[in-house]
Image 1: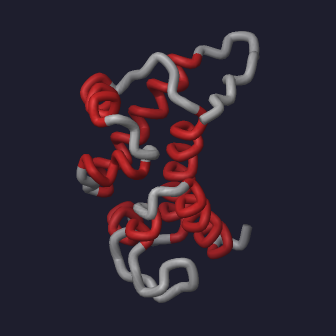
Image 2: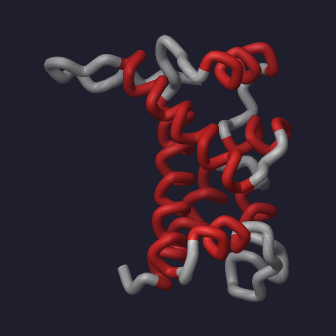
Length: 134
């Protein structure tokens, strides 16, 4: 696997960005009531020891671009749900409800996202963006 370097920008701190992303992810995971196994899959199945270190410390020196993109998709999904649905509770519960819409085929959005690929996350995000008219 080829690692794509972080952009070289003045003042860019990979540890700060990585730690903020992990904090946001684990906060979202708590709202969605995800298991550790589900969290790992959504993060791209990092090694168990790495994952549990991230979970315990909520920090990392440097997350891969893949992990950062995954977290970005998940945060975008959460934002879209909060804009589309009438309450934070409804938004948080939506991901586990069966859905007959095209990308879900009767399964929940979470089931789709747990397919494990970045495309699964992107498909859910695209669906929600379309619902918002974007």
